[in-house]
Image 1 (spheres, rainbow, N blue to C red):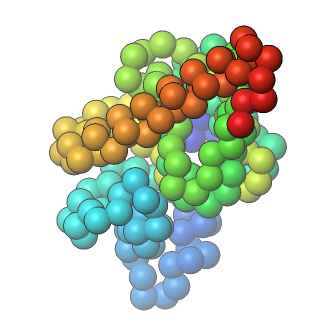
Image 2: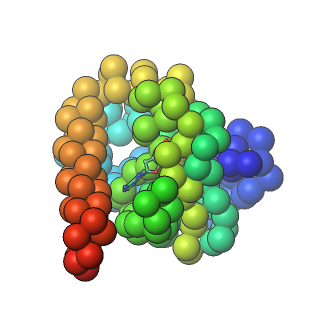
Length: 173
Ligand code: CMP
């Protein structure tokens, strides 16, 4: 069963926010501070970042948790703010994803079940965008579409490289 940020009893939003927020900083400002560190959002205006913050939540996830489970339905998109995850696809354990990288977009884009199991290899702080907000986010900040497509193209190339290496018995580096 996939981690569900709406119902699961993981430390959610407020503890992480409060820990960083300080007395004078609102939770929204703290969230924007997190977003400013994410390359996917680099160069975004304060207004755009504020909109991302409105449509997203910050979730803390302990190391070892499965954030997505292959074959299960998925309703959220994730951007890593802190920590690392391992991607387990049907081809095997593939890339590690690091701060600034995203996952979970495929099920939102095509409505199919999760294509991979994503496991937290360290404690994580994630930005979580739910399905309805995901489309609104892309509508309102179309720059995000181009950035995501560029990254998805790179992932396809890397995967093709890996499959080629497996088929030809070479080391997929
Ligand atoms: P989704 O299928 O919604 O859930 C699992 C996620 O793993 C998927 O979206 C992608 O974000 C990510 N993913 C799947 N395959 C790869 C891959 N080869 N490299 C990096 N990330 C992947």
